Amino acid sequence: MKIPFNIPFISGNEVTYLNEVIGEKVFSSPGKFAKKCEKELSKITHCTDIRLTTSCTSALELAALAIEIKPKDEVILPSFTFVSSANAFALRGAKLVFVDINPKTMCLDESLLEKAITPKTKAIVLVHYAGLTENIEKVVEVCKKNNLFLIEDAAQSIDSYYKNQHLGTFGDLGCFSFHDTKNIHCGEGGSILINNKNLVKKVDVILEKGTNRAAFLAGKTDNYTWQSLGSSYGLSEINAAFLYAQLQELKLVTKKRKELYKLYQKNLLPLKQKGFIDFPESQNNHNAHIFFIKVENKIVRDQLIHHLKESGISAYFHYSPLHLSEMGKQYPFISSGKDFSKEESEKVVRLPLFYGLTENEIELVSKGIKQFFEIR
Ligand SMILES: Cc1ncc(COP(=O)(O)O)c(C=O)c1O
Image 1 (cartoon, rainbow, N blue to C red):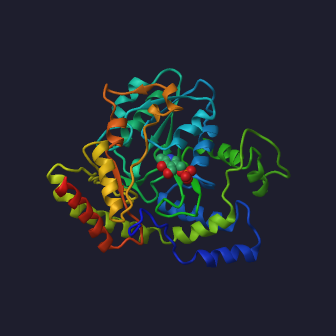
Image 2: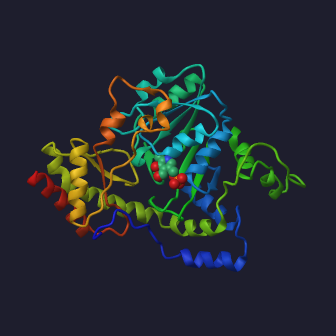
Image 3: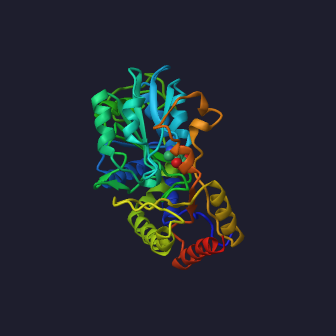
């Protein structure tokens, strides 16, 4: 491919910090670099209780354990999301209740929530697609009114804000990804923001394989034992050192991605005005994680992706709705009668966007898209 979809960011300091880990010979979690990362994440998000995890998937699984999801509990989530948002709760035996998305935001349609809630509902999982989201207040209000936990799947949302508040800090728990497809990464990694103070101790026990090792390491007990269900969710120092080098350059990464994102918006505006494509114009301060356009339908989407591929440009569709999947069709799907999760997901084309992408490459991608609509 002449223009790949993503090239993971490298800050240049990763090797220096990895050498420090090798020199100091502390490789397991939690170590010096985990603490440094947590501090850095605290500065960005203003959340004071943050733990690193091996992935966003494990942060979500940890969240499901922390809020004690049991068989028959109901968990509401959008159908247009990654499988991990669903698996984490299905693994605990929850009955999933899929809710349709708002085509404008591609996030869960909060106006359908009251219809989805039953006496068995225990939590809502809010997925901030592309680090963009709207109307969080409404979801927070519904959770408060119905005494539900709010879990934010903020996998794509590092350095994304809603009305100046960092995503992942609105709910009880916020889960982030540092997979190498994300703005910053450590190969595979994640973190959990614990906004609900009542869950801090529980999260620490679950993270330490179900033991009170965290209390032991803090000198609060003289041994540690099995306390509850748990698993091996902590991030190794090798990954934490790598992540720290990336976190230090987060602002630079966001700034560059936003410039590239704006250039796509500028170049493609004429096609939007002519009604060939659509793309979001969020007023919120987001992290430019994904630049996606929406075309007329699946046929046009596939043709456009093929056309770009012929010119050496890598563009992708995104999630297939979970309620239509082999596993997901056993669960209910709440909608207004339409199926925007299917309809809208079939229109999505994600364009190349990464730190090292040049303005010239954006021009080439934009030109390729314009050409496609001219010759159709
Ligand atoms: C919305 C969402 N949640 C969770 C995940 C899983 O993240 P990870 O790969 O860090 O487990 C992803 C992956 O991209 C995602 O898009």
